[in-house]
Length: 245
Image (cartoon, rainbow, N blue to C red; front, side, top):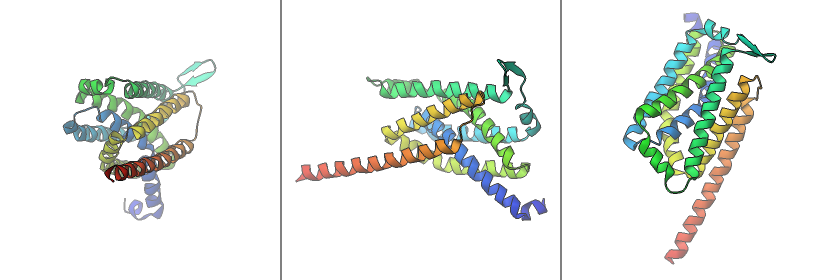
């Protein structure tokens, strides 16, 4: 263990894994932020804590079964010359669920007559946590499989998972409040989740799309929207000044 702690390669691997887990966990945090905002404000922090806590538990449990996870990449069924693995089933189910949930959210956001408000009233803490659990399993599964390819040291992977989840928990409240205050940013987040769901489904058919492109597109769209928000804020300030004169 001492050699592990004093090895520069270990710390480099830990840093790379931590950054990777944070990046791969962005979609998880965004999803949790969106569904948690359907709850009364007094329950939102509790739901975020439980949601990210479950994400941590799932990741640590999955890390404890590395040999089993490796076996889930082996085809157990062949359909039209396409080998189906356990990973494919998990990714397809998660992708379809995420697309269906996101479509519902977009429809409620665009519906007139306060449809989203009615949805908030129907949402309960157990129901929101159940949705978070489903996506936690999918995101945890994909995240851990990626981590296995970067390191073969179980303690390093577990430490990186714990650190990344603590960081995400620290910022999840800010992200949730920011999305709630800015409807256009909420729509951007929903569009991102829709794309993530589509990519998960595509991966189940062995169609690999580099995630770097997706995250770059999301970051670029976020930067453009921040500029739009600043422009709108400036126009509102100018209008207020003119009205006061």
